[in-house]
Image (cartoon, rainbow, N blue to C red):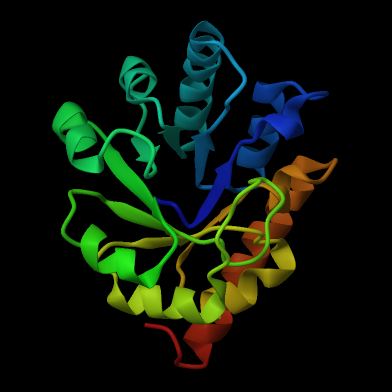
Length: 216
């Protein structure tokens, strides 16, 4: 599981773009994982796209995560499945998928971190760190809460919500080692260049912190 630069798809960014070629650009740019998240497609459409995406992510050595749909995740042998409060409970999901894939779960408060520590999940998505345009309703948590969430969590934390390339350094300095983004890569015409810039910001910040002895 490598979610360090974790790209999440969104319907609005694929109205005038082909899915697979666009996501291949992101993979060429260095993203380490892709979460397939769509709300306005049929199950057949999603399955057919996921079959292609499964092949693509394997070719580039990246993780494929399916949002919500445990059935589709199993059908294409995804690496992981991500669920939220309105989906199947994570303990049920883990019972279904077993050791075949990892399970992620979204939370947006520090109080929930303690509860999720006791759940059979493999990572926690925490946010929204900044205001975001990809969700109509979001809870703004901020950098201080993110830093506290990383300290409290017994699972890897993925920071999410409004994280653009120029915000990567402060997110990493807050303690996050895994960063999810939508607009930070898909919001640009040249997706490969945007992914490269995002990955470069990640690696440069980690390198600087290591040299300063602030990261082990």
